[in-house]
Image (cartoon, one colour):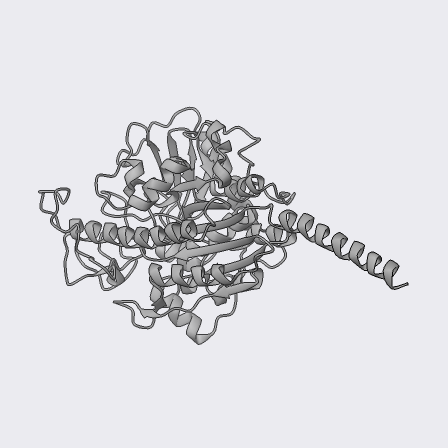
Length: 467
């Protein structure tokens, strides 16, 4: 019997080995996914978008290697709401996250749940309290790291984490990740968010060739939401020169971009770049010194193009270029990102997703895309005042909550949105109003506030989102 038994065991061993060989590639046939969201990153301050300063050499290289979309719009000008919509492919009225003090929903499908169901190991690395544990996002990842290490310059009670440290933490996890399954890593970088104090070379653009020669001044404020002033949390050395703040904002982008370069180079050195789908976007942008836009160096309640048009760069794995077939100049929503990334990974898209899979659904040049400031509380809607807007073709239509006033701009001929055309609106104004009415009719004030700890209240007060 020893001979037959030995032969049987050999057959079993060979079978197991063959099965192992067959299963291992199947388990790793799925590419990895890394999604980077950069807080407060304007789409028009990047080199590949035509900006003259060298703010983004590494992101520029990714844009050349992959596909970038010049007309991508966020659902919200607030961090919490924007991320909730990005992850769930649902608008704020359906996620219930309309302001930064609300929790990420636990009972809706998300890109995290879809990838987890497909066998992915999931990890999140964040740099701000808004998307830290108070948001409940940690419940949606196998591993979650929100170790905030640095005090903000003007708000010592607020902690954050510089881009190089967040990227280092993510790379450490990736190096130790299971090799028999793909991974999804979300990296959130806070750096372009004010105050603009890059840890490295913060004044690199101050006084440069693009600094401008016209002297100007914006008064400093002792508050964070006073129109026509530089917010208190943004004040740097008592300067009232808007050119100085713009230069410092650009230096923050450059610092973030260096960390992004470290990420890309390390993936390549470790042999992971080819099998990794890499996407870089933002939650929202930032007003700088645009004339007439009420709040300088700010976001959250303003929905002009500079705050809701966001960058989107996607580099596909294994040399694929499926996104090249898309007419990328047409407008798309941040709701479209999650279903498109899942499609690129060949992972089933949850039926509840409202965004489009761009590989199958052509972009509509006349699509109406709604973007909202933070809303759902009297403070946001009446004391501060927030904006609800829709972009359709070249037109942006805005409703201001505080007084009900309306604004209309032709962004094609007036990219700075300086000429309000509402006094002589086009015939399609009703079509511009309709998406806002439909969005706000269901839950204008209906998003319940979640109880916060004293520590969370202090952190959010430092951000200017609660009193």
